[in-house]
Amino acid sequence: MTSSDRGRVSREKRGHILLLGLDRVAKRNAFDLDMLDDLCRAYGEFERDDEARVALVFAHGEHFTAGLDLAKVAAQFAAGWQIPAGGCDPWGVFGGPRVSKPVLLAVQGYCYTIGIELMLAADINLCASNTRFAQMEVQRGIFPFGGATLRLHQQAGWGNAMRWLLTGDEFDAHEAYRLGLVQEVLASEELLPKALRLAERIAAQAPLGVRATLASARQAVREGEAAAAAALHGTVKQLMASEDAAEGVRAMLERRPGNFQGR
Image (cartoon, rainbow, N blue to C red):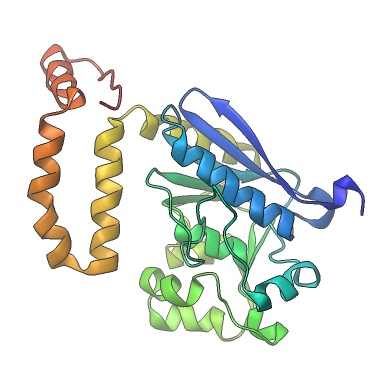
């Protein structure tokens, strides 16, 4: 196997943004074990980096991902693939820790199977108008095991989700927007610039507040509204005592953007 056949994930830091690029272009960025493991490690690096406030996942080449390279990964998944040491679980279903900071995805070309499930585990998704989606596991004798059966019906509604999960049919960017899978459909040349601007906008906000917002919303999904509501007072009490909260008040009074430090 040549090095170009093996998947990897590029890393690039731009201010408080960490760009993570799927890179197995020769195989349309289909996930082999190397790329699966490297994406988990990259998420772990993002979680541990206090200067990185937002992760933006994109893909090198024409396609986001052709899905799992089943010839390369089937045996390992059947035996029980695990998140590598130091990694976080990008899909939130394989038993590893999840990141506590925002993750944005910018997808184009093919976005199949585990790529859709990566989107369902992310916080905001943008796609190019040429993107083609398919959750085609039932056409391969298996079923979606990266989170689609848990989350797609929550976002799209039961019938909309089953329409695509039970057939494996392909759908386009405009259907993805209708389903709520993506928040914006853009021209290909505008995709990454717009995603970067959005990531920068989020990164400019108070990091503690952003993480608390994500944590509260996720708790409501995971444990229910009552549990999340019960935790609101304690969380806001902690945030009110932070340096960032004091800076937020100063910025409001001085009519300027806040300069937040995450403290």
